[in-house]
Image (cartoon, rainbow, N blue to C red):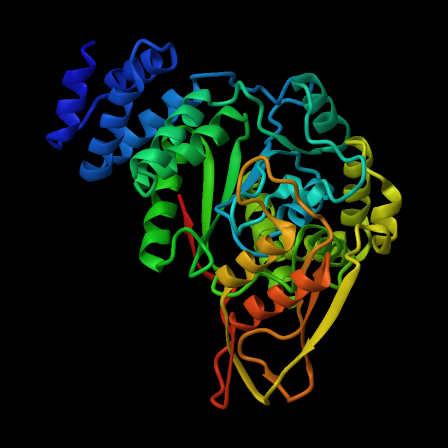
Length: 438
């Protein structure tokens, strides 16, 4: 295989076959192809695109560049392992609630999650608000916990899809991050390597998401569903709204508290709706016998009878977390400065810009600007009214949680800039735009 010929072929807009893609990626991960040639191929892909078949081949080559987990060892025959993935958003604590619901239904949920970088939070950071909780698990511990309680959320191992990590580092510095085939293959390679059978993709869309237009989000969702199908996986994608924060809480410990409330049946309406929809889709992918009505009724029952919350408790204890913080969320990290902010005028909330909220919480210390930044789990904000709702002058608008008076003042200024209140009534924002199935 001559790597230059493959680069030229893609540069000229021709399709690469699976053998060419696999050979190129194998030699890249073996250091036989230098970074500059991989970067050249990435740039050719950026401009020329890839067919579904090419993107699937690239995805499988990256997945097979490292360890391919077999999560079914020790589980009953025909067990279906389910997972979900979110493209990232502000206030997105969905995995903390969906996982326990689906596991309480009886389906094993094995999930590899990441940390937040920038204005979108990470599942692992949220869970680490719980003292003692650990994300580093050996493969044996991962499988054992999946067998015993049916729910695992852990950090991605270094041996999982290493080609993706190396390629992403190059994309980040060569201006090729925004390529749909490269985005889709990056996400799906980790899902294929993680050993799950059915995946629900939550593709965020809006000013607070990586995909800001509906068309972009839909194209990415369709591509990832096609990759999953070609790789023998069951995949459904939801296009969901990320113009304003999801739920009310933004900030690690605050989001854990909201997740616990939702598991106990008292979460915010928009967040609860999304959680139930994702859980429904995960269960539906794994089962051909339950009707839509039965699934929805069972999800409601699992929340109402406490089974979902009990599963969350089991999961936290299994990974070393302090159960007292779960049973009494007031013991979660608490900021020293908590300030209620009231509306300065009456009117309808027309905008709460998710990205500005995310950046404000990051500046408070709740997120990372650099990979090795330390996180303050206690800081953040809680929205008391959402887009489309009316507020009166002097009514509580949001509450800020900060580490000091100075950071609180700065945060209030940033968060205020994210709000727009006017006299004209604005429609409530939808939670889900559309669903794309295989």
